[in-house]
Amino acid sequence: MSRNLRVAVVGAGPAGVYAADILTKSELPEGIGGVTVDLIERDPTPFGLIRYGVAPDHPRIKEIVKALKRVMGNDDIRFFGNVAYGDDLKLDDLRQFYDAVVFATGARRDRDLDIPGIDLDGSYGAADFVAWYDGHPDVDRDWDFQPHAKQVAVLGVGNVGLDISRILAKTADELLVTEIPDNVYEGLRKNATTDVHIFARRGPAQVKFTPMELRELNHSPNIDVVVHPEGFELDEGSHEAIRAAKSQKLVVDVLQNYLAKEPTGAPHRIHIHFCQNPTEILGADGRVVGLRTEITELDGTGNVRGTGEFIDWPVQAVYRAIGYYSDNLAGLPFDLATGTVPNDGGRVIEIDGNPLPGAYVTGWIKRGPVGLIGHTKSDAAQTVELLLADVEKLTEPTHTERGAFDAYLDSRGLEYTTWQGWEQLDAHELALGQAHEHDRERVKVVPREEMVRVSRA
Ligand code: NAP
Image (cartoon, rainbow, N blue to C red; front, side):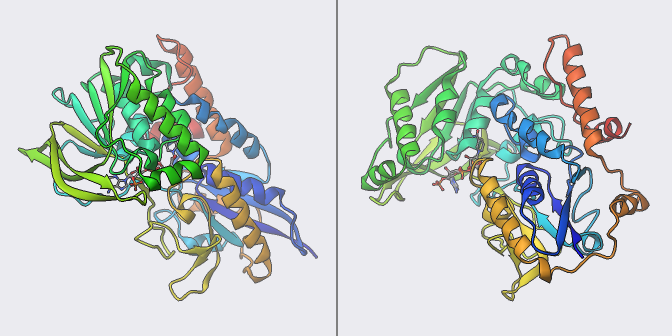
């Protein structure tokens, strides 16, 4: 007799949806007749960082949603939104309904930067700013733009640093064609930034930008990109990095083009400074008034050493874009250094070195917050392969009928949203866009209660 395998995937971002897709398409082990997957998501909406992480002026990346929607069209995959793992449910609750749980909760918080002044007003984390401009329901509706904050520092040279620099340097009206919520448009109108200074602690061959994202930095008529020659050096380690990866060579070529280019006189500038390690955020009356960096030099290996020389930059706000960090998950081990759940190819590993039965991870919670969205596919394939190899060891849940989990959520009074609910909210946001005085494609709904109300109507 064959039985069905029931899997819960916690997190309905790309990593979770890919895991569900691969699970339902995999060849199943002997004794398993079918597999059903329930995606359980803290947000009332699916798609995780595509909705709440990708910058609004990147509609091309948001197109990935089309492929994810096709996956969600599979009747064997269901969506339960507005249900927070850890607060509303824990692993033991899920075990009553599922043979296995795959955690795909990603990384939403900013990695800490332990330098003096980091807690001053005017010192922000990129993840918080991204959550604000992408209209996440759980963040304040207003951003703390100060009228005097014209010079702004961005720490870190990854794609998140590029995203927030573009959003800070563009005008609010340029962004009105995107799906930004009304409160974000109103907020951006108060943004006084004229100059964004991006700081790299190493050299041009060590940046984490990708070529396309770096090239489009000057696509706005309002922005000049100014690469500063100080610290623009390539050592043996840099040449090695350029030889090893074509994309790194392309990035350095783009930076060299910017370096050679005369500014056009655009009203806003994005400056890129190399070999500047942030050591302190300077404050007065509790607010940011500057950034101190130590000049570094390449040591021949692609790393840098400090020179003991410092520069004070007169900036009125500092955004750190030095990487994301995952939330600790109730009932699971957590590695504080990497911000990941310890695992072996996706099988969760307890502190004693043994696998935690029936618990798996995929995406950024598995391998840390690096890599593009597409990379989570191969990651999910590896996790799913191990899960299916473990089938005989999994404990069957006590409640196996399909409606049992819904009934449980109802009995707990949890106001969950469904895939059909998302389709309603999606249609509602598109209609808001059409009705808007500027005829926009979509206007995002921000308050959680309103999202849930429209989804459950
Ligand atoms: P990231 O690519 O890892 O970049 C982090 C940057 O912060 C690095 O330049 C790093 O420098 C720097 N950094 C770390 N600690 C620092 C410190 N203490 N002081 C100064 N600088 C420090 O991370 P991310 O930008 O958050 O991006 C995460 C992933 O999402 C990446 O894979 C990225 O490509 C992807 N993403 C893609 C897009 C897109 O549009 N395609 C948009 C956003 C994000 P070191 O190298 O010296 O450590």
